[in-house]
Length: 126
Image (tube, rainbow, N blue to C red; front, side):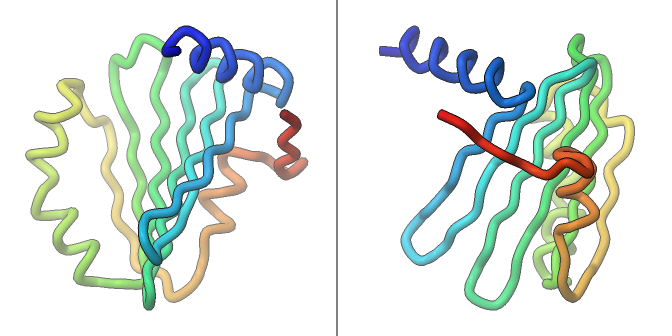
């Protein structure tokens, strides 16, 4: 079964301009994961909660020698908790985090989202 899933993921990546979109729904919360493969790995995660959101953009070269992570939210408490766990995140990834940036934004995902999908937007074919 794992091989079938891996083959399906490769097929989707190859046929969608090296982009993979995966919706997430946990109880009343929703979001999605967007993965793009070119010369670097780019991963965009959006989690939507009742009153807030969290966006995460991860960029890493294929050799994973360093990782760039940018997080934004309209909830300062979420960002503070993430800042407090910065050291734990580095240990979990087992790779040097080149940049870890946190930003507070009332509304938004377009800047980080455009970083990964580009100006052409996202069209997913299965």
